[in-house]
Length: 422
Image: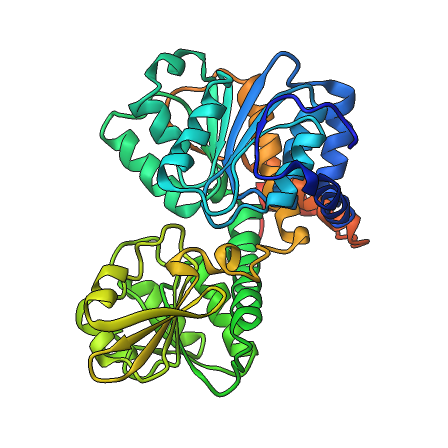
């Protein structure tokens, strides 16, 4: 053990040494966050500040917590998904001086208890993934609102929820939409989700993707990434969408586009990435082929309507870790991965996004938290400042050994003068 435990509610502290080894491994592959950590160690921007987070608790996330800690913050962390927590990582984080709350396979009651345990630290800043902690703050812990200087939200789903809160006049704290940072959604949502989704699916099922009909429900940045990786693995990709522009883009990218009711008839594998409810439901299950597999890479386990699936089946059993077999009334078998939760984190083999990708996202979180502390922000949903994006991208390029050009003085004049070129 490398440090005194501050406060923790984790499954097994004997796992701490293994967790620390994994944390050390990801640190080697997160150079931008390590650069920021060194800056924070010198500047101590969070001296006297408490930061509470509700994120997927795995080694890369613990590295974010350690970066904030290096800046002087007291850090309290819990998980945003009962099936995505790595118990060795939480033990390692606790041993390294972070206040850790949560374990894999929490009940719903335990899940909200650990969120409240983080809020008991009376944070000044919140870092959330899916907005559950922010909702608990507004609904159950209103006495803490006056102390909160601001919050950061990691996901598309969370930003949508918080924007809806703001539109209704219910949001009472400034919110930086880190998900809307270029260095987050262009890389995390696209390359991270694409790779981690198939890493988890292939590791869990040992299924060949080449030659399969893979339906991708939703063509936002996550859907683009999933479709691209499926295509690269040799799948026949079908995209479903409700947005005509995104549907047109998917077709121009070379994929078939059709309604979900038609697409399910062809599918060997369906992956939902919409952030919405009941994407697969009702008669969709009646029209699926025998052996069709279902997975979700959206945030919550509501995209695939499990109750509808159960009501149409005669039996449900786990045939392999993180794979449930539903035997339908006509004898067909449909397989649900990871209980319909985030397959890239909740499946048995789910490790989440690569460290090199989370290096960008968590750098954006760390700098956005610093931005909240240094600025008096109004209550609103605010895009992460562009200057932070450019700083992060520059640091990542430097770490990769890549140099790019600068505009010459003449080029700057040309771009700034509307009369040039006439």
